[in-house]
Amino acid sequence: MNEHVGQKISIQNFIPKAINRLKTVFLEIVLYKLKIVGHIPIHTIRKLCYKFCGVNIPMDSNIYMGANFFNPSGITIGHNSLIGNNCFLDGRAPLTIGNHTSLASEVMIYNDEHNINSPDYENSFGPVTIGDYVFIGPRAIILPNIKIGDGAVVAAGAVVTKNIPDFEVWGGVPAKKISDRNIKNPHYKLGRAMWFQ
Image (cartoon, rainbow, N blue to C red):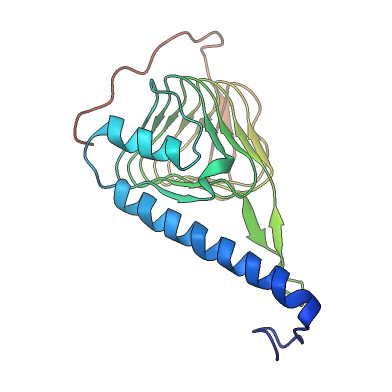
């Protein structure tokens, strides 16, 4: 018997492969349920479901409607942070989002990419760490192995391929430094989340 990439399957590797396949199917069912949960228009219910499925999120932070996930158990969100509508959060490697951090609508954060030069097209996982008091604009994309420093700003539509130091403003494709952020000691709170969002 051959697997989908043409390699032979033996009795010795059949059981581990079958167990791995069952784990993958179970995760896909969880992700589908989270996709459905993402359309419930009540923050508290969504948060409780996300927490139950492994997202480490405090009750004073919010994820707006329409969020999608890969491996929710790899995601940690700090206090008083807001995740906008239709964001994509990848927890296949650790994804850490700090305190008082705001992700606008449709931000995509990836912790995995494929090696396009590999004959096996293998995965390459890497953590993403986003600091405190960060703002990430709409439709920005954050790629694996990235650290965004405290107080940094990522402009709308930017593609972040390099680490961003504290209190710098970056934008573009690929993202580059635009300026420095004037405030260096923020202490604001983001305010309450909008109802039914």
